[in-house]
Length: 356
Ligand SMILES: NC(=O)c1ccc[n+]([C@@H]2O[C@H](COP(=O)([O-])OP(=O)(O)OC[C@H]3O[C@@H](n4cnc5c(N)ncnc54)[C@H](O)[C@@H]3O)[C@@H](O)[C@H]2O)c1
Ligand SMILES: O=C(O)C[C@H](O)C(=O)O
Image 1 (cartoon, protein in one colour):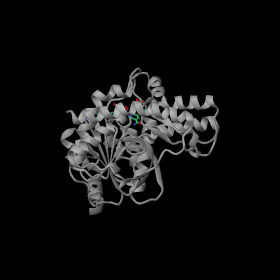
Image 2 (image 1 turned 90 degrees about the horizontal axis):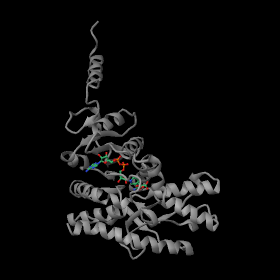
Image 3 (image 1 turned 90 degrees about the vertical axis):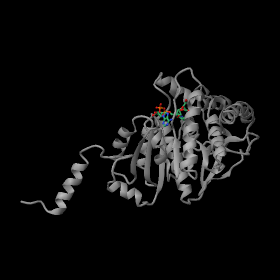
């Protein structure tokens, strides 16, 4: 019997998908998914730069699961075709496209609403985040030059370490390009909040989802300053608990680096934190009220030009930066230590671009 027209079309479509690429890589031909993306389905267009990495892969999976995402661009300098093929088979709404290498950066970025950057090398035991500056500063500069050129209105979530320096680097790149908007550049410090909520919940013996700990300052060692006097639900700690909790939150990254013993730093909890933060950014961008997160942003909360604190997110990025609120004596001492180190890290980032 002759197959009818509809059936033969279906067979042709299925067999087309049996031959690579069954996902959409830059340069491959148009297919139905691509048309759907071109049609501008409602939702946000999100790019992950460094998508094939330890953070990038699980983050790509979580973003593919987010119903607010209509188009997901996965860019890396290696292995993005495999990651794209894999993620693209998930039967969720977002259309996935992969991009490999610098020549494809333009297409990876064009039209994006949100750009998440976890590109760069991670720590090994014995290293500080600042030890990553030499390699990651240049990576962040190149990628941010791309953002300035190809999607200057996008909100940027910057993950690459040392965040205390890479955010100032990104700001200087955007200033140079004439595209800088302080509202749209956010250093991701959500993992510090996620850890603080978890560790405090352990001490209080409650569900971490019920806990909210503001973590301010920056994202490295003593610059990570949990405000344990402002924990919700309201609670008190002994002096020993305060000291132990603060130290554990500040060293959370190192705890993971040492446990991984040379195989990198936090990736899964970081992908979770980055996805949580990106979701908050997208909810705010679509107009949801009352979206508040901690982030490392251009700030006047202290005398430093950048500082992490609670910010209200809105349709254009950061809408309002909240003051630190009343601090305990323990926190005031911690704040002075944090500012001292932060000042140097910010200066290092700014100088990297200004003195280039
Ligand atoms: N902000 C935070 O809270 C936080 C938490 C964890 C890790 N980090 C940082 O995130 C970064 C990535 O960590 P990871 O574990 O995913 O590392 P990884 O080495 O597993 O992955 C990094 C990825 O970046 C890619 N990459 C390198 N240069 C690139 C370029 N020029 N353009 C695009 N992609 C490029 C690599 O190919 C790799 O796939 C590190 O700097 C790490 O310190 C930050
Ligand atoms: O600790 C690291 O190097 C990675 C990251 O900044 C973290 O806090 O886990």
